[in-house]
Image 1 (cartoon, rainbow, N blue to C red):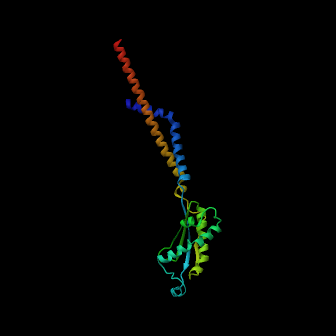
Image 2: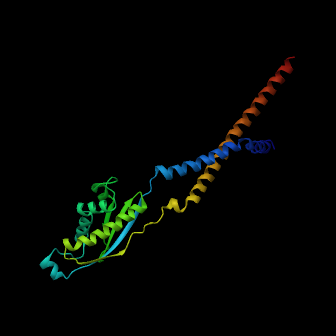
Image 3: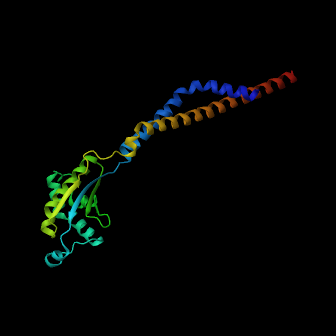
Length: 223
């Protein structure tokens, strides 16, 4: 009965610490928002797909470099797409002279080609999703213009442009849910902390009263 009364008294007194509980919950939400907005910088990816029609093997062997299937051709395309000449044109076309340089832009680009496919994927990663898409599309257009001058390939077309609004990150898609979880977590921590503090306070007061009662009894016996 005494333990039940103690617990009820603690729960009742939790109302006195409601401001602390709500403050911890709000602090948890704020920390999650700050962490995802300013500390953890999201990286977006935008991809442009290009279909490249391969010339006849005989013509390639006679007039230009062999452009058959396999890793070698993918490496060749990757070198062309990420070449300083093409990257310089992209930077000038998008007016990014003050924002980036050829070396930095080079590191943002990945060129891939599925096995036995004539589709080239040009993927650009960056912190700005709109700019990443613009760079991917500009790379695709300039690559199509330059490829006939570098190889025997004469037919290359963009079959899929990078979206100007790439897919949102997981946090952006679930912002409300993420902040809600943070708030609930902070609320639980706040209640737990308040409960512990109140329990310690109650136990301390109870022990103090018992000690005072014992002292009074001793004084009464010796009177």
